[in-house]
Structure formats: C-alpha cells, structure tokens
Length: 248
Ligand SMILES: Nc1ncnc2c1ncn2[C@@H]1O[C@H](COP(=O)(O)OP(=O)(O)OP(=O)(O)O)[C@@H](O)[C@H]1O
Image (cartoon, rainbow, N blue to C red; front, side, top):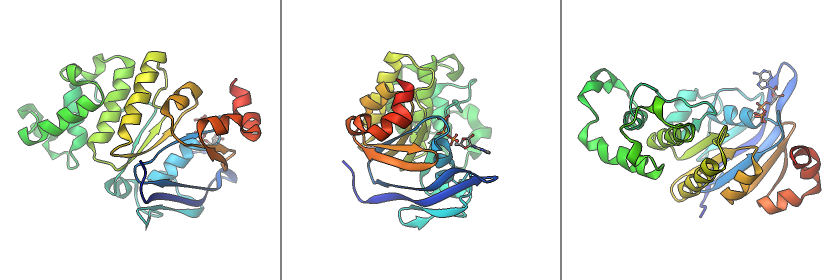
C-alpha cells in the first residue's frame, strides 16, 4: 500500500556533450510504492538512477526526496538521506561470509572493520539475521559470499541495501543473468519489500516485470512515454512500437 509523496523527479535533463540521455523527464513515487521502469536499450533508465543518487548532475530540473531538493548534494549526502542503489554487478566482498557482508553494510561508520576479527556486535546480530531471513539466505549465512550461487549473490546484495536502512531502494536489473526459478524468487523478494520500503526496479525482462505486479513507467529516448499497469502498457500501441515490438 502506498502513502504520501516520497520522490519527485521534476523535469530533469541530463546532457552528455549535447546528447540528452534524459530529456525533461518527470515521475513521482509514493511512500511504500514499488515502481518498475522499463524502456529499450539506451532509454535512459540507468541515467535516471544516476541522477537520483547524485552520480550525474542534471542540466535542468530537480529531484525532490521527502520534499527536499537533492540537486547539488553529493552522492554520500543523498545516501545518508535514505536512498540506496543496487547495481547490476554485485558489490559484495567475496572473502567474507554472507552474514559479515550484511553486517558491514549495516554499519555507516565502518570503523569496526579494523576490529572485524572480534565478530559482529551482539546488539547487531538480530537485525543482520532478520535481513538474511528476509532475502532467504538464513541457512547460507556462514558461507563465503564468493561461494554463493549467482542468484544468491544478487539476493545478498539486496540484503545489503536493506541493511543500510534506506527508505528508497533503486534496483538496476536485479535479475541479470538469472534463470526462471531465480527470477521468480527475486520477484517474490521484491514484492515482499513493498510493506516497508519504496522501490524502483529497472528491468528488461517482461516475465519478471509481470511477476512484480507493480505499476510500470515506460521511458523512451530519455523521455517519459507511458505509465500504467503491466497489462495496460503491454497493450499500448506506442509502447509496443518503441519497446515491446523490439523485444518480442
Ligand atoms: N557517461 C556517458 N557519456 C555519454 N553518453 C552516455 C553516458 N552514459 C550514458 N550515455 C548514453 O545515454 C543513453 C542512455 O543510457 P542509459 O544507460 O541510461 O540507458 P538505459 O535505458 O539504462 O539502457 P540499457 O537498458 O541498455 O542499460 C545511452 O545512449 C548511452 O549511450
């Protein structure tokens, strides 16, 4: 269930040497909402995430989070305000366990890294365990992250994003390289996040998008094209011609 307005992307343009990767693009997201963003290759989806998280600077427009204008803030400052992004490539540390990765992500100051051999502070164990449970890795907690299966690594990274406590989670192609069973499990996991987090998911895979059962925003050439249910966008002639027609 969604609540009041959380994020407003307000007419942003991102210009790479005269090429507009985003062109006066706008969208809003309510608290607790899950939104899927789709579009053909080069539509500007990753650039949208970059602009929200402060990795690229829009030439025009604003991004408002809980009413605050994020324009001009550093990526670190934006993360501190409660937005966290999971990239396509996992950012886990292979040589430590799944549990230790989650514990590390939960720590903002990271100063305890030097004292890592002493283990995870007792008061943090419960929240780390809760995250591992949530992403279905409770029984894999003591496995070195590098030894996890591909899908498990992706779920671990989603767990690490959750452990940061971020209110808004950006997931860029979370099912990249997954088979159908792992993809379904990922959809289930993301649907479960909906009760506590707001989520923007970028993906190409329409069977995954269908399983998410969330409203879809369609981008094309850096612009907003359509928004609606999966069924509505799939049936939309404009969407079919720019996107679905190409991927069918
Ligand atoms: N740093 C950059 N410099 C120049 N052009 C860029 C840069 N980053 C992205 N682009 C271009 O901007 C456009 C949008 O890229 P973006 O990666 O946001 O698209 P996308 O929708 O995420 O695509 P894909 O589905 O292939 O990941 C593309 O044409 C890309 O080549």
